[in-house]
Image (cartoon, rainbow, N blue to C red; front, side, top):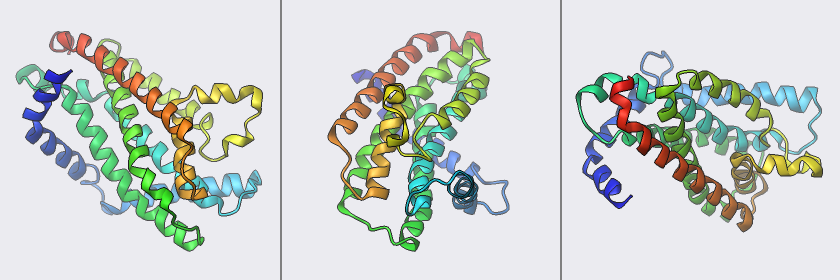
Length: 258
C-alpha cells in the first residue's frame, strides 16, 4: 500500500491533468456550460418537491432544503460511480500503450466529481438563505463527511471498473441498481419514517448514514451523531479495501482483456 501511495505521488502531475480534463469536458459541448452544474439539480429539486411535498403530502418544514441536502451527495455518488464503471474500458487505448497506475483514472473521477459537488452547494446555500435555514457550526463537520463519501465512491469505482473489464454487463446492472437504491436511501424522506422492523435493512446501505450526516449538517443544523460517522467511515473503508485489492488483482490482465 505504501509503495502504491509513492507511485501515485510520482504521477501527481498526470492526476492533476486528468482532473482538469474531466472538469473541462464535463460541459464543453453544452451551450449553458457550467450553469448546468446548478441547473440540473435545481430542476430535479423542483420535480421531486412537487412529487413528494405537493402530491404525496410530505409534511416537513423547509422540505426543499431537506431534499437538496440529500439529493446533491446522491447525484455525486451516482454520477461518478456510473461513469467510473466503464472508465478502464473507455481508456483502453492508452492502457495498452503506456504504463501508469490505472488507479489514477478512478481517483481523478472521484476528485473532479467532488469539485463539481462543491460547486452545486452554491444552490443549496441559496436555498438555505431563501428559506431562512440557519448556518451553524455543524458545517465544520462537512469536510469529514465529504472525505468519508469520497472513500466510499473511490472504493466502488475501483471495484466496479475492474470487474467490468471482464464482465461488460456490470455497467448495465449498476444503472438498474442505482434506480432501485435511490428509493431505498433516505433522500426524500427521513429515516424515522422507515418502520423499525425494516430499518436495519436500510442501515446496510452505506449511503444511509452518510445521507443522515449531511441532513444533520445542512437541514437540522446539528452535529452528526458520532456513531453514524464512525459506522459510515467503517463501511466506506471496508468497501475501499475490497475495491482496492480487487482492482490490484484484476488489473494484471487488463491489457489482455481490453
